[in-house]
Length: 552
Picture 1: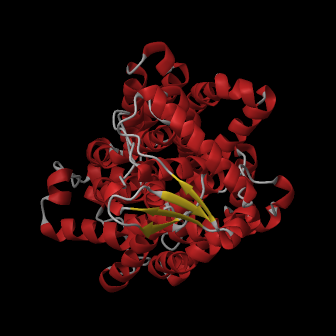
Picture 2: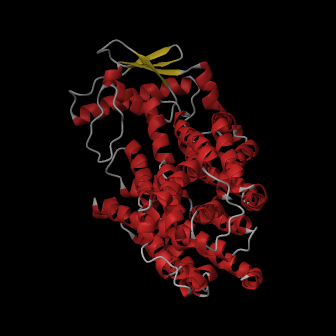
């Protein structure tokens, strides 16, 4: 047995570069497909949800994006079961084909103006297919690489899989920027945004070719040859409390915090720059791309370090650091990204003085709700302009007012007004509000001459380094938690519930909280609370696994 282990280890050392490259490249292409939607959410909202008001367009586009994350656990169950029964290679070959085709069809799907409500319906269906495919992809790639890796190097080897998510985002940003710059903003927003989706067909062909060259995992082959593979992986993984308890702990004590740190550091940061700070999309994408370029090598560094000091301390430290520093970092983004907002908020703070009973939670996914109270009119106008404000309680039944420093602007009750009359009154109120905000120094867009890009990149790079701390070692940690016969199924579910539900909804929940409270930093409470919970649960209930033998 000892000789076999040595022989197998030597073989792995010879072939591991090809295994890692093949698995990583395929996963890069899958993440490229998935991230395109996230990066183009605002444009997609305009083309596929144009029947809704402007605020609902963006939030509903984010919800459609999150829908792909919502079904990822189901993909983990379906493809995880296949991976434990028929093998790792063929399962994640299937997932990449589904992913690539669904992304291509987004590029040719007509918009709302052409086919009406069918457009967002089909779009969401394609997003669901993407989510299902990705639910089976990550567990297969991580398990495959880990089962090829020699003892003591699993953290290092699987860290290259972790890089793929950032590379996929980086590649998507580069393609988007190249297309936008080549066509101009007007042409890109009209139809050029479809080109990055169509390019995915070329990436799909390359990905399938690369994965066809792979052989099955030696650990899985040996297990199957010995007749020890699971005949009912779902029952073994989730029907027995001993393993189910570990799945739950892996979710709450590892992947939930890892996920919110990841999506806050990449997606939420991008949306914060464009939606809250009004930095133009091209500049924001370049800033994120620069931060990713700086931070990406740290995936490998922390993966390598986890082979020496352990997975647990690095992941949990990343969660804690993020939770403790998110508020100052995002306030720093405001200070260096759009200092005019910061200055105006300090010298002429905006307050909405209104009866709380008259204020709605303004989320309208189907475009049928009417927000016509004086409070809703005021808050809707401020949200549309991206202006931070605080809430002040007024007497019951009072007409809402917007206070900008020493200036008071009365809103109006629109419940009794007809459509045109309400629109005219809203326009007049918006013009009056806009003039007062301009006088108070609130900018409509960030002034590039006042933006400190160097400091923005530094702060964004810190966010990315937090991502590398929690994400670099996570694959090795999850693989090592579960036995070989049900590894694909067991590790995939907590990973994708964590990343699909806890992480995928960070932008949506964050901006809904901002719209509710008026505080541009209020959305950070969601990832902070989750990250702190993961820190304590992981610290108390999860074990270190770096020295585990995963062949059993």
